[in-house]
Length: 79
Image 1 (tube, rainbow, N blue to C red):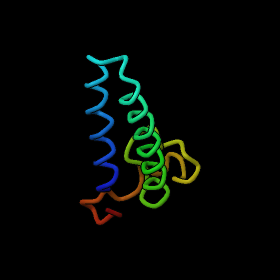
Image 2: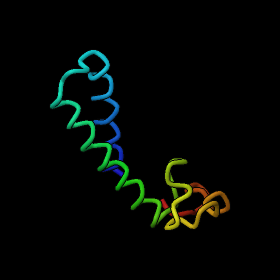
Image 3: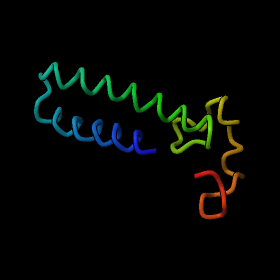
Image 4: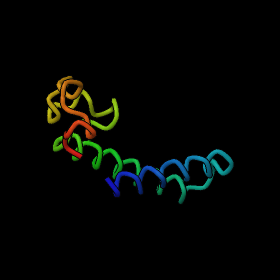
């Protein structure tokens, strides 16, 4: 979860930077690299605990829409 938070922050931060510096190729590569890391981490998390975002809700590894009927973390679910 910590890794997901870190790469999500990096993606959001560099997105804001690219809004004002769209020609910075190094920043664009950083963005692409961290988007890949974030997507991989989200898929891995969904495989073990269920999806965090709608992006991984249709992943076959997370049993599709069964995530809605799983216990929430405050109900004793996986956290």
